[in-house]
Image 1 (cartoon, rainbow, N blue to C red):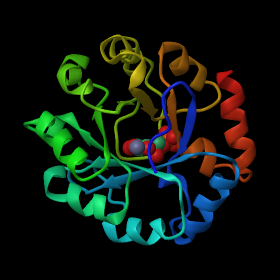
Image 2: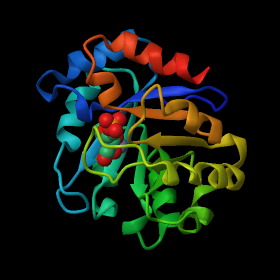
Image 3: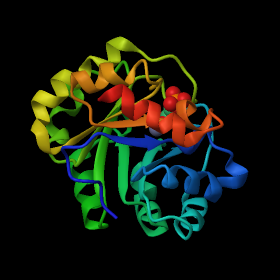
Length: 221
Ligand code: DX5
Ligand code: ZN
């Protein structure tokens, strides 16, 4: 699977707020609601103060789902692990600019592994830091919370970076936004030029996942 071509708004449910004990069922529910992408938050307890899942869990989940696996590596040494994530079956690998010395080489490596590449930046990291590498990627992920936990408050100043990033990458790169996305905040980021909306709590924190996804879609149109 590949990221959908640009030109559409996509909702990417983040499994961070799902029931990890029933992961395949949780992913099946959002698949039924018609999403194409599922966002997999990988945390190492070092780059961020939380630990989630790694390649073994993703490889098992891969057997239960045909969705685009969008991995968000919140880890200090992505260069050590990108191959393992590709082998586990992820489609897109997004890494943090804050921990990579040669981001262009990392993008090339991800492409060689047969995956699309995403670059992301923390709320306090300036756009300038990703300006060069962003054009080499299929996706730029704008963090609108400090990475590590679901259910945090949307940061409006971080979201404004989307406008500048859209000018840099043009229309053919997906701009994904992650953190505090709800029907109230989704139209703000779409207005700035984002086309891929990660939502954890707004979807998996609700009993009716289809209704939650529909509410996000409706808010963007
Ligand atoms: C945070 C993760 C997010 C998180 C978003 O570090 O990268 O993907 O799941 O959660 P919400 O949508 O609840 O803010
Ligand atoms: Zn994420």
